[in-house]
Length: 141
Image (cartoon, rainbow, N blue to C red; front, side, top):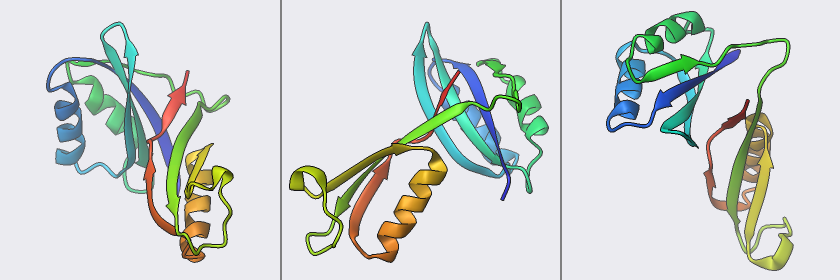
C-alpha cells in the first residue's frame, strides 16, 4: 500500500478540527492516519496519511485549501521526505518472555510508524502485550 503524507497548517480555532475531519469523511478520502500537534502562534498542524491507491492526494490538498481555517499545506518535497516519529507505550504481560527496562511491565519506543507497526506485530505474535497506546505521527519540518 502506497501512502502520501500531507501536513496541513490549520488555525487553532473552535470547530476547525471538526470542519477538516468532516470534509475528509464526507468526501470519502482514504485516510490511514491522522494526528494533531499544536505549533504555537495560533496554529496547529494536522499530519494526514492518505492511501494513494484509493484517493488522489492532490484532490485532498485542493479540498483542504477550500476551508477558511486551513492556512496552507506544507509542500511535498519528495527529494527530502519529512522526518516523522511516533511514540508507543505498551503494557507487557507478566508471563511474557520480553524483559522490560525497570521491570515495571511498560515498554516504550520512539520510531517511524512502520517501525512501530513491526514491533506491535511482533508483540502480538508473541502474545506478550496486554494493551498499548500510540501518540500519533508527528512530522518535523
